Length: 119
Image (cartoon, rainbow, N blue to C red; front, side, top):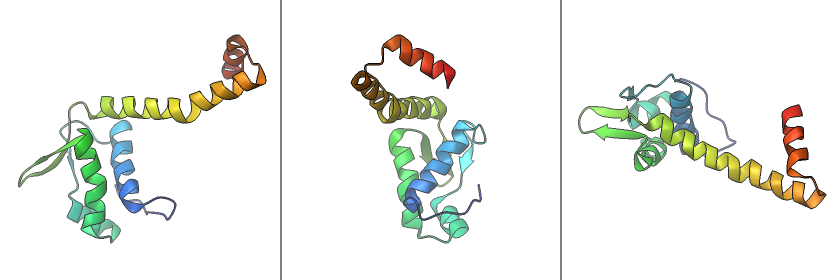
């Protein structure tokens, strides 16, 4: 999971997204162990609390879970949870504004559908 971090987003968010992407891409499967916050901290040379913030967001969403004294693991429905969340984000960030602009420009649903198929 070693990749360099950048300054574009908060570090905890990058840690969270790396785990999410690993799950969505199939590199992390249900019940796979993920690195601990201390392992993330050492790998990326960051404060363990920063890594913990990103990891804890995934715990709160049910994407990963902790086994005391053993580690953190990918939940069995992690991929489905992430897909549902990302679909909703996609709708809010892209589809809603697209539809509003199409209405503003007088583009019919059929025209919009044709444009999407062309793209």
